[in-house]
Length: 487
Image: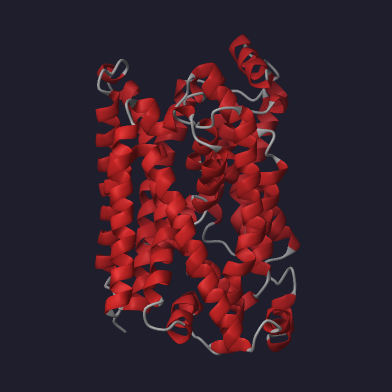
């Protein structure tokens, strides 16, 4: 189908607002600290909303919609619910630690503290592997939104990727973290409006308010179960552990929201707000996906279910709003990734590569150039994803499998319990996780829980095991842990 004039106007206004905000935010960044951590002045409510928006992308409307279509309510139980529990349950721990790292060490990148906690080699391994993986991960997300928009609106994949990528490139490069945060807020509002419109229209289509609870009687019995194989309790348990690592800072951009807070109380409040949103909002967002088998029975391509549902349910003129919300979901996550990766490259990698970056008198200019180049690289990957063996399949799976092993030293390194786990434990755990993934990725294991979680589980065993053997804690690590415990 093709979009009508009103749809196109809505989408254009959305993109123009992103560009304008980015340009206006240009003047809020006086130095690299403003550009990467908002000068440590990020209000809790903006940080919490941005943390939530940055935690998911347009893949929700493709991959997660497919699981909701085929397996029902279990989609909420293995994604939104564990994420909400993890974030709220640790809201007085990791957000506080990340803020204290900036207070004590002046960090602007989540990886800066690794040089003290372990050593330079560990920091560089985590930094280089994470940046390389993120180039493909962000590129895959551009490709995902391109595929969805092609189904929904007849927009070519290339057009969808270039438009969303270039607009993001402008506001992230100009505005830095302030540009990302303010656009995250606007994108959140667009998501809320688009999601509620979709929810209301689907409920009306199904017969009114009673359909909210009555829907499950019209679906296969397994769709109402909390755990629907292969998404078993074991699988959810594994996902809890992976989300514990990723949403507390293993996804670097989420750590940045806490690092940028003005104090530890604000950082904790930001986490609680994000957690509450994960508890509540997905129940509304997923409802149309759960209802899709009733409205669109027998779809052969469930990952296109949300797109076809939009075409079936939405009137002309409203489609543009929901399309904008799909753009918003992806741009919120990718822009956050780009900003934080630029911080890692600028603060952790370039000073090691060349001495001239150690005392950079033009750090803000360097930050903007790094952001621009990295964003261009992700767009290039997205436009050529088929040449990389299918970015949406192979590369996303690689990133998901390797996130746990690379996040292990970063997150466990903050906890006093693991202070005896030094550089050997960190590097060995990353290598063990990588080797486990390479060995098992083509094997058919006994459960999906093992297929997804084995690299992270092996990595954790190696990390903790070597720490128990060595037991020696350098004075610098003791001093760091003591600083993190100091209010």
